[in-house]
Image: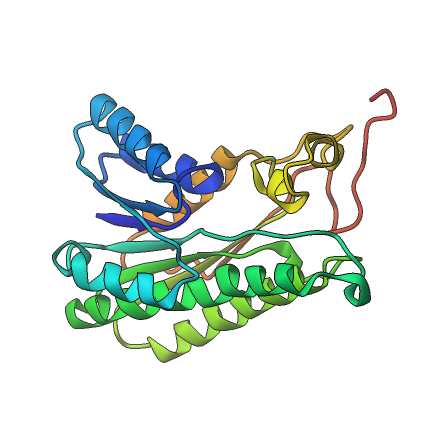
Amino acid sequence: MILITGATSGIGKASAELLARNHKNLFLVGRRGERLEKIKTELEKKHPISVEISELDVSSKQEVEDFAKKHSTQLQQVEALINNAGLAMGRDLIHEGKTDDWDKMIDVNLKGLLYVTHEVLPFFVKKKSGHVVNVGSVAGRWIYPRGNIYCATKAAVAALTQSLRQDLLGTGIRVTEISPGMVETEFSLVRFSGDETKAKAIYEGMKPLSAQDIAEAIVWCLMRPAHVNIQEVVIYPTQQASTSLVHRNSNS
């Protein structure tokens, strides 16, 4: 069974669909219960697998602790954790930023990843196997203008991934970070508070990565033999050379 956070859309949902095609049982969590129900129904109808779901806000320490207690039996069966839940809020200069946005990014991108990982790892350590995949970002390595707090949270994810790998050395647990460049999902829509015009402009004149592209990389890492650990994967679309350098077609 593979546990995926932020499974209701984007990379999380695409990963669930691809893993289902590979006959992997799933445990999907996210904030939108109706979407989880729909995904569960669709995947179990199409594939010979079982799908567990739970509405969960990973940024709430209490919710995550309650979730772990309630589902301890299922968590014993988890063979891999995909920490996918994450978001960006705004593109403000740091001195003009909204501190509520800062709190949200830190709570979801950083604390949420930590809370869930903390509850799952004891099961992995006990059975001396497991795989933690953290979905980071190229923004965690190469900062871009107005990225400030989002970049900081993803830099923390990169540091934590390395720390996990060192702390878990000898346990048989693998740890991977996937760092995508520009991916067209609901990410930009959330970043701009639902403003579709601003969200679309981010990808204007270029072909970004899709959620499916990143899901394929995640599943490839998961499917390596137990003695192989893919530590880091950095993925850019062909038309992006850095976090701030993008080639856009002139006729768009």
